[in-house]
Structures are given as structure tokens and as C-alpha cells.
Length: 457
Image 1: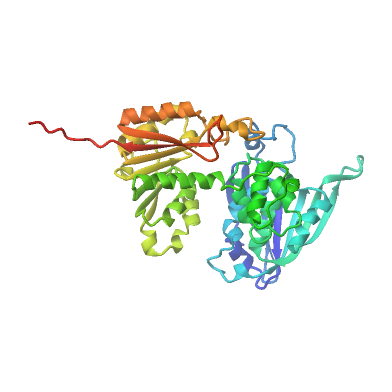
Image 2: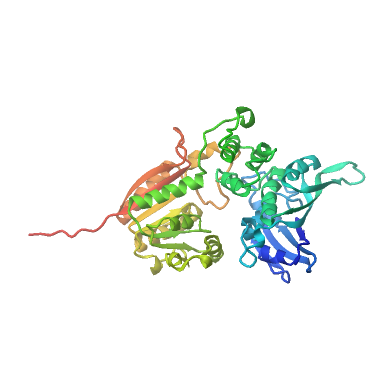
């Protein structure tokens, strides 16, 4: 699938600076379902075009089919723009989508002439126009005909958008509306998708005449999520029952509730020197940095790539020296002993253990509880009993999960760890608790039992 962006802003090659991609190179990125390439077919002072090509690997796509509607062997995913392309935009143009540029910061706030083409997009011309035209685009949606012997038009259009907008706004429009037109996301839609929608829709979604349709489709027709998103968009104009069909109370995304619960547990034990084990791209690290009580923060992960993502996300290169001295990122495997992890006040394993193969879990347990031996350990993991509340979910919550435990299984594991490694443990739920299935996330707080010296007369 293909997307091209063209500008005639002078000098047009500034597009390379805004996208943080050199026009003389072909840039390649690994994606969960294939490979993304960014290249510049033309790059002159007068006109510059950037092309994003997503080469979908059907084998990788098939591997994700168990939990999602991708089980048929023949489908349009490798060819038509979809949520796969939106994910690629988010990954390869992350800085541009956020409106940041180290080399052209003044240009990020400037509207520039843009021409965007998506040669094959699922959707009818009328709906495509209703979605993009209110955002300032001149829309040309040309239906793609079926084979001559069949006659008529297919359900796809060749889309051309022209307008003068900020590049960040253009990318956010595409990031939200491509999945809306696709109407069949390639991954499970969890409550944290609300946060993505609100972040990318900031400044335009609340006033869009099709905001209800956008929220419903973006959130995979999960009515409770769509209602929450719409209420958060405009707290002064609550969503009516007619619009939402299922009114619910406003609530924070589960990812945010989980971070808050972890921060509360760390405050409870008075931790100031903290390890974020399996830190990923740094969601928790950013929250830790905002709390002044944490004087030393270490993010550890086995993947060098996600550590690079965390560094960019946290903007470590722009951080004041005093703030930068509080945090460091290290590459390490949690299934081996690493002296650099020893002696901290607390360690966090937030949504980590379920990504470890069960035969390898004892090695992680020994490395964290037995050798590193922090003063406290905070562990969160999904509660599989709660999965019945996720409509359409037939497998685990994430394709990389090796297991998901019931509350009884998690409690039994936590008690074994506490007994084996001399910790006490308390367990609590995170998120809205159901009287039958419990909360969506379960959290265990381990506190090390300090050795005492017995004095005899």
C-alpha cells in the first residue's frame, strides 16, 4: 500500500526536515506485519514528494489472525490503505505527527501547501468527502472500477487531498481517518485506544460534524469506548443517549489508571531509586520523571530498538542536565543476573511477565527477586477473567502474550514468590471492578522482609 505527500513550499526540500528523513536516502523500518519504506521520488527547491510504501508480509499477517478478522487467506490488506498504513505513519513519522522538528521548529507551526494521494483506499467517495472536507481539504475521491466484464465500481477509491495545512495536522487526519474508512482494525481495540484518538484528534475532532461516526468506527464499534471518548471530547456537551446508544460514566483509559496505581504503590513504600524493568518505549518512565521524589530512574529492556524509542519519546537529548542525570536507559535481559540492577528501592514489572514464556519465567523470578533484590517489587498483569467484557476478543489481549492468569493463579504465584524470596505481598485490582470477574488489571506489591539479628544474653 502506498501514500505520497507533496509540497510546493519554498524550499520544498524542507519536507525532508519536517519528516526527519533525508531525501537522498531510502529509509527502511520493520513493522509487525511487514516492512515500511520512505523514499523521495522528487526533491527539488520547487517541488518535493515523500512516499511511504508499506510492504505487507502475508505470513506475518496470517500469524495475527487468531484474535482478529483476518483469517481469510485472500484479503485486501496488502494492497488497500487501512489501519496498517495508519500504524506505519505513527511509527515512521512520529516526530512530524507530534509537530516537532529539531532542524525546522518554526516551520512545524506553519501551514504549507500539501497534496496527499492514497491510490487505493477502502471507502465510498461520499463518505471520504464527508470525513476530509470539513478539515480544510479539497477532496477528489475517484471510484476504482471493477474488471470490465463485471462492470460498475469497486468499494475502493483513488484519493487525492489538496490543501494548505500544518503537516502535523495532515498526518493526524490520516492516522485517525484511515482506520475509520477501513472499519476493521488489524489489532484488538483496548480502552487505551481512547487516548490515541483524543491525542491525534486534538484541535479538530471535537468540532467535526461526523465525530460520532469517527469515534464509533475508530474504536471498533465498542459503544462504551466511543461514548467515553465523545464525552471527553466535549465535557460541556454530554453525549446524548441517542448518539451513544450506551451512556457510561467518564473514566480514564486503563493504561493511565495502571500507571497511577504503580506510582501510588511506589509512593506507599517510599521509593526514590526505581527500576522500570521491561520499560518498552518509556510510557512509565515519563510518568516517573514528572515526580520529583524519584531521584534515580533506570529503564531496562532487552530491545535496543525500543530503548531508542524511549530516548526519543522522553527527548533525552533536549533535557536539562539536572533532569537528565536522574534517568538512564540500559539494555539487559531480565532472565540473567545483571549487577547494574542490584540495590534499588523498588523495581516495576508493568505488563511484562505475561510476555515471558512460562519455562523462562523462573529465570526472571530468580534474577529480580533472588539476585537484584530491590526493597519492593510492583508487578501488574492482565486478569484473564475480565476478558469476557471485551466484545469480539477470542484469544489473549495481545498477540505476544504467552499466558494470562486468573486472579487465583496470580495470587498463588505471588504467594510463592513472597515465600521463596522473603517478601510480603498484597494484591489489588486496577480499573473498573466487576463483582464477578474482578478488575481488568491485577497488581501485586511485594515488600522485602529485612533480616534481623537476634541478640542473646
